[in-house]
Length: 425
Ligand code: SF4
Image 1: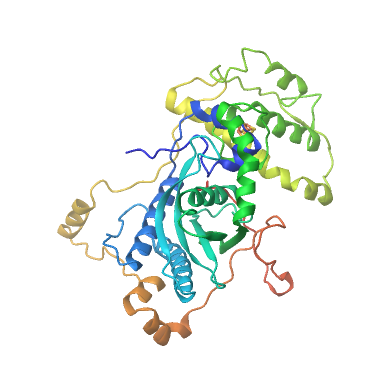
Image 2: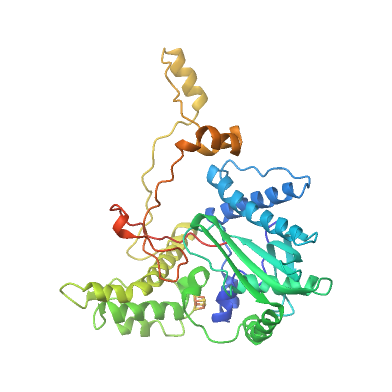
């Protein structure tokens, strides 16, 4: 059965809280799945399996030839170890916690028809013996750091949990943790029950506006996963005005004022209207070199511009490739492909019949496979001395990223890695 999402989903709450009409504007665009999302769903099922196994429930290990990798095993281990530690801690605090895995939570008292699925709810006592609700969320993304601090998705899950269990358990404190192992990110935000409930009250009018499709369209970093982005006027105007300010002489070329004004006609504001690319060449402002200090200033906006460009290109390409919409000046072509065997069994038989025998390579099993085979303790005893952890690839990230900065004086030269964004769960 296809997964059902609330209009005001907790995972898109940052978006509808900043841009209330976005919830309704997206309705006409299909919620297409992606390999990243499918991998995320599989990884969540592995997390669930590991926690339920710890809880001595009868479960079978999820299988996927496509998505099962050692890395998935490793990152789901990080999650499982984190939540098991919380459960064990609560037991040490003198209680048998209530543990709810993949629990549906209803926060419709805050946002109309709002519901979602929390990866993990643990209700018990903190180190001072006070009632504690701990909400955990697993993220597989490696592109964008997700911070738990005032994270609206987590806060909505927590409000839904309070609505369901807050009457039975005397919850005073709420902890909300995001576990994002691919970025080494485990962050926890703590709130009192009163603070959380006050926040819930404060967003009710915005949630109502979002549900009714009212309010002002406002572009920002929350546009990242908005399905309306490729055709959103606010987003286009923001991206183009950023380009205009920073790079281009807009008296000329594709990004000239007239290009945007021309799109303001009622006909062209119709998102189903045919796409009309403007291929006039943009003219760069400065014929010379742009100083580093200027590049530094525009860096924070570049991600937004490139994300918008990518989304427009992806949308137009999909229209052309999947729906045959003609795009003037462009054509659909086939990419390069690699030769492959259509029938490997027949290949092996034919090669052997003709006297060729060296058909297979032998490979050393991986570190994780060794660890699984020997068990962690034996592995550490026998092979621990041979394990090294090479430094990760360096990348430039915004200052608010919680990872500590690298001491570049003691780091050999490396090529930098550009952060890419593969979507969020
Ligand atoms: S893309 Fe447009 S509709 Fe979507 S969140 Fe951004 S401004 Fe709002």
